[in-house]
Figure 1 (cartoon, rainbow, N blue to C red):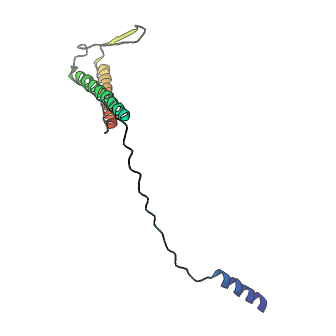
Figure 2: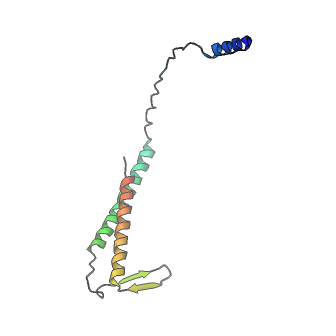
Length: 122
C-alpha cells in the first residue's frame, strides 16, 4: 500500500505546478482610413439624394392635401371613388369608412416620409 500512496503523491506533484506570471500583450488595431469616394460615386450619391428629396416633397404635398380634406358629421356630405387599372370603379358615401381610409392614408404617408428622411444621409 505504501507504493500506491507514493504513486499518488507523485501524480499530485506533477499536476500542481508553481504559478507562472502571464503577460498580456495588447495590440492596437488602427482602423483603415476611409476611402475617398471618386467623382462618379459622389455624383451618384447626389443624384440619389435628389431623388429622395423630390419623393419626400411629393409625399409631403400629398399628405398636406389629404389634411385639408374635410369630413363633416353629415353622412352624405362626401364621396369616395376608387378605380382600378381595368376601369372598374367603387364609389361610397359612407363617412365613417371614408374617415378610416383617410386616417390610414395619413399614417402611411407619415411612415413613408419618415423612411425617406432616414435614408437621407451625407
